[in-house]
Image (cartoon, rainbow, N blue to C red; front, side):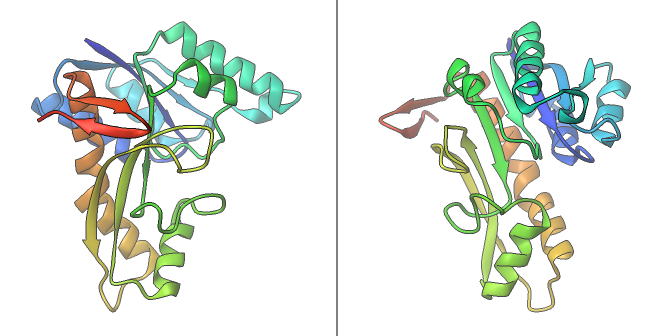
Length: 208
């Protein structure tokens, strides 16, 4: 049974998609053992508690410096003993020691087709603002493993979504969540939980 820790910063719609997929049997051989947020007001924490999942707030605001925060975050993660860490809208930089400790065991969902509109500064609505400003016809979402860079780790799944002429950042964000993020994130977790994914030479190999 794959044990997951999910890290979130906001409403937790991707967390909900994962919980729903588990409920429907679309994710098998996995369970969420904890949810961590940097934001005490994140609705994602409420979603977790309603589902009976231990939920914790570890905020940088509660620590004297970033080093102390990183130590607390890594300490809580280790306490939960995860096999996989899922960044589901987590807007805090993961400490290098955590990436090293959980190499190829941290995945992230990003709301664009990497390498487009990713990296430093591209998060949340800013991704969709950038896509619309550039006039792209197709956007989408990417699930990837996390490495020391920003959105540079090995890609697991991508799903394209058409951009409509009258899209706003918010309408595009919602459609990408519904048509891409909420589908490929649960799929990636299911594949990992069932031994269908491995990383070799910096690339993901999928066994169907």
